[in-house]
Each structure stands twice: as structure tokens, then as C-alpha cells.
Image 1 (cartoon, one colour):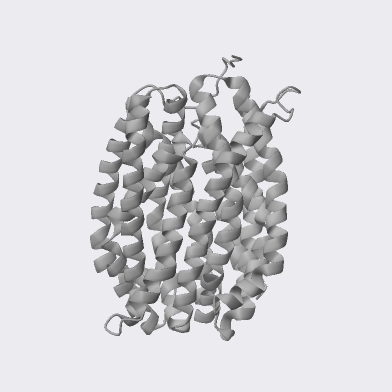
Image 2: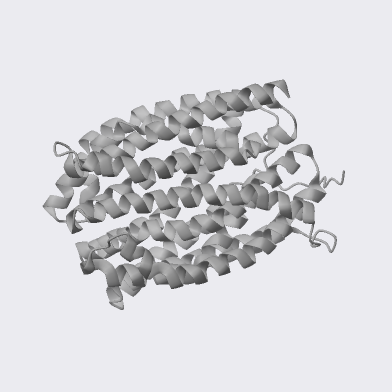
Length: 452
């Protein structure tokens, strides 16, 4: 077993110490980074929505589920590689850690390029299938195709981040993401306000910013992180490691892409209610994307924690981490309720000035906030199961999500007493169903790992 004794101070070993302290220490930089990641979307939405028009905001919103699908197909591989890396790190096999870094990189250089090309070709048919309103069709298509060109850059940054986080380093991605985010805001204003490029300008700014984040991150990692100093032996293609990354990465890609397809199905329902509903849904989605970040951060931290402890065969620490994470999640979910109920109008007003959109968005936030604890449960279980390398869970979670989002919104919006509000009630119901099935899968795997 080849070991590298010189570990960077940014690297965190999560197999020892207090689980809560480790998870919080790891999560805080990543949470800040995730929040800044969302500033990309918020900057696009706020600048376009206020400086161009509500229709321009709706165009970005209508294209979001499609771009999410393309990125999801790529990000699963990077996430899978990160999980395999964390398991080898936990077991102390530094040689395999380096091979995971190089072999995952080979996949991530080819796969996103293929996805980006296909996405560019099929973007218009997808928008047609989603019943995108004619008033926003052209702008939606322009935004999607620009993001398709940037698929490789976005995926590469996410790959580098996954690798660093697998080693317990959540700070390095933050440094470059914050810088790139500030650049993104400046470029948004330049391309949209000065150059008058509207939606296209917002897309160009995002792609350039993601490229800078990824490039800066990899250069820093190669200079400062010993695991990224790869020798000739480390750069060789390792069939076993490559297959293990693919075996886990493909189900994760399937999970992410099925969730993305389910979001597209919901977007298709939203589009049938016209531009006002699309704009309100876009605004509330942007707000709740920020809300998702603490959950997502905890989930990612829990994946690294679980992966390292699973590699070290410290199974009871995994269960302890799950329980402590569950408590933190419930506390946060309850704390968010008063914000959504009493500050909803103020938050939606950040995006648009249209009174009808603001009113609809505020009520929508009140509805979905009732289900935040179930959303948090999904993320906590996902963190543990992904860290264990549970490929079946990834598949199951995606299937449940897509069935729910295809059926529940159609049923609920067709009830006259609910109507358009069924869009947001259905989101909560799907969170409940997905959270419950995720919890059942965790109970099954818990017995297995305790008996292992």
C-alpha cells in the first residue's frame, strides 16, 4: 500500500474526531462556495429581470431545467470519482488516490464534450416538448446553446471540486469560486447593460466565469496539493479504477439526469399557465436554490465523511454522522419557515417589479416551505448512501423523483380548487415521497453495514 506522508494542511481526515465538528468545519467553506455558485444564477436573473424584462427572466427560467439536464449527465461521473477517491483516502492507499484523480480526469475530458455537442443539437426540440411559450422561445434557445458551449468548463470545475472535497479540502474551490463570482457579476453588467446582449450576455458571462474558476482551481491544486503531483505511474490508465468510477458515476449521472428530466416535466406544466406563472416559478426557484445550499452542503460533507469512514471500516461513525446531520437539518428547516412566510414578497421583488408575479411568488414560497424537512431528509440520506457507493440508491432516487414529477403536478393542477397553486403543492408532495423512500433505503443499508 503506497502512502504519501506529506499531506497539505487543507486536507482533512474525517475518520477521527467529533463528527459534528468535522462536518461543520468541512461544510462552512463549501456552503459559502455553494452560495456564491448560486450568485451566478441570481446575477443572471436579477440583472436580466430588472434591466431587460420579465419575459427575459422567464426565458432563463424556462431553459434552466434543460441546462440542468446536460450538466447533470456530466457531474455524476465527477461525483462518482470523488466518492471512490474518498474511500481510498480513508483506507490510506495514496497511490490509488492519485490514480483516481488522473483516470477520472480522462473521462471528464471526453464525456462533457460529447454531451455538449448533443445538447446543442437537441436544445430546440426539448424546448418545444416543454411547450415553451413563443414569446420566450428564441431567448431560451440562445441561453441554452451558450451554456452548451460551456459544458466542458462547468463540468471540469465540478470535477476538480469533487476531487479536492474527497480529500477533505473544501477551502480551495471556495477561493476561486468567490473570485469568479465577482467577475461574473461585472461581466453580467457589461454584456447585458453596456453591450445590450440581453439573455445571451448573461450566458456568456457565466461560461467565462466558470472557466476561470476551473482553471484557477486546477493550477492551485497542482502547486499546493501533493495528491495532484502525478508521476508517470499515476498517469497510466487503470482499468479497475476507471470501471469503478464509471460503475458508480453512471448511476449518479442517471440519478441527476432523471431529476433534471423530472424538473423539465414540471417546467412543462408551469409553461401551460403562461408567462406570469413562469416568471413566478423562476423567481421562487432561484430563492429556493439558495435554500437548497445548506442541505446540499451537508449532503456533500456527509458523502466525504461516509466515504472516508467506510474506507477505514469505521461503520458506527457513519451512523453517528447520519443522526447528527439529521438533527442539524431539522433545526435549519424550522428556522426557514418565518422567512418564507413573512419576507416572501420582499424576496420575489428582488427579481421583478410586476405586482402579479410578486403576489403569486410570495404565496408559492409559503406553500413549499411546509415541506422543507422532507427535502432535508432526501439530502441527508443521499449523502450517506452516495458515500457508501450505493449505486442502486442513485437509480431508485431518480426513478421516484421522475415518476412523482411527471404525475403529481398534472394531477394537482387539474383540480379546480387548486389550479396553478398545484405547481408548488406538487413540489412539496414529491419531496415527501422521495424523502420517505430514501429513508427506507437507508434503514435497509444500515443493517448491512452494521453487520459487515
